Length: 315
Image (tube, rainbow, N blue to C red; front, top):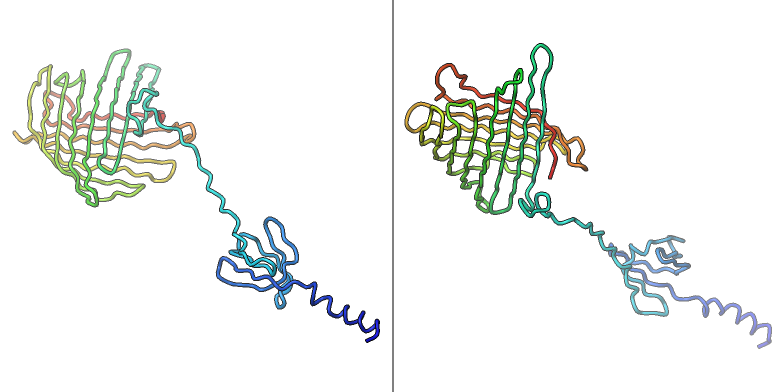
């Protein structure tokens, strides 16, 4: 064979010798491709497929890659770990350890008029709520003072605590609660009442809680013209509704019939809370309360109606 023929044969066989066998690529969806790897980066592979032509595939879509010279599959890129946000531990009310992991709120409101007559009022409130799988606890404290023409016209204070013992996978629960009142404009100076019984959750979702309660209890008044011990029944409803991320509504109505006679008390409260700045934790609160007491004497109004407009801070 002449030298020229050897040269031509070598040229024809060179592609067969130098051309690498196609690589086998397995995608994460289960598909496989057999193509030449033309170029590669840290994030992509550039392939030349005999039918599909040149294509670029992200490495994140590749499960394994077996090249012509390496039978070891290429491991997929490492998964990115989700960013963990650091949440500061709750140290309680003002860092004292009290009411740790409770939802705490302070209410403060002022109001008044000036002119031919002057009025002013002050209201301060503190609320704290806690809930777990086993129990639900609510604490409320409020002080109200009003003056008319520089004379005291109303002054009252109360603090209350209620606890629900929840049952797993059941809407029924047991409850017990009590309240202490101080009011200089009642027939009594101090009043303590307590009750316990059973409750039922009609609705309990992330945005809406609606429960009913029924039980027995008593109220005891001290000082003034009325100093009585009265056994009472108790029937009430309570709802808390987060309308959206900015508005929250709370309503309760509790009826206390006397077990001695036909007298009764009825306590109603309504709170509307509007977040003004969620980051700072400041909200506007409109509160309305009324207590009807059929046992009042003389010409005293049986209704004790109060309304408050306050700024509320998350503590």
